[in-house]
Length: 339
Image 1 (cartoon, rainbow, N blue to C red):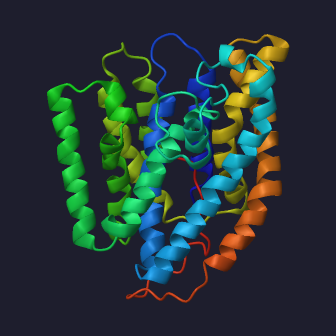
Image 2 (spheres, rainbow, N blue to C red; image 1 turned 90 degrees about the horizontal axis):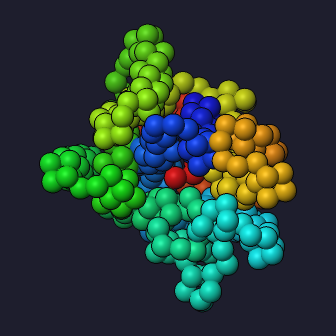
């Protein structure tokens, strides 16, 4: 039951990008690492339960990941291009402008090497590049054996401890691929822990702790970012572990379907509102942007994702049988997510 959580995380990203506020606002940073944890869990789960690690299974896994990420990405880029070309969108976000070289076009269309350097037609897609790297690494290496997954996790924790001890800046701890490993590996080990039973009070308690952590560390002075950031990894992993035991509802699925389009389209929608209505970044822009962002996301899902989902369902046949019988409560098609 990840749909509500995914749309909440997407809106946290939107909130950080559009709502300037006094003090700290790292809600999007926290949310992106939570997405990474969810990705680590889901990719490890689906590889072991649905695809397997033989050649045909990996082919289907990588095909479906490609179909999930790129069609919606390209649709948002296509929608954005005329506005980026003819309106001063870069005044709203300095990274949004037309690529000037073939390599920059390639990076934006394929996500290959799409990190922080400009231009980025869709600014948050740098995190999709991180996701793609770990999709590949998890499929080829990290999800193959339990001991490999746990070794990866402990190595990632050790590297994170080194970053903290050495005083690495927070940008490196957030944007870099090596620093993101602790989030993906934290999610991956949840697959092997998922049969552990939890009491009924655990889920509401973790939700409350997660919310308090998100709120509290955004009110304290800057310089206390790291405590909440890494505590967020622990709490997000615990929440994902808890939510994995709940059956999704129809509304939960609808909410989850909108998460990725919201993640992709909010910048261009907000930029258009800013240009035509002269509303600057702040609470007003955030609130006014939500309805058109959700509407456009619904259109993207209906016109693009539903069609690609039908193809993905055909690709993901049920020929693979896991070595051990597992719970059948998990949905037949893997819930999708943004990074």
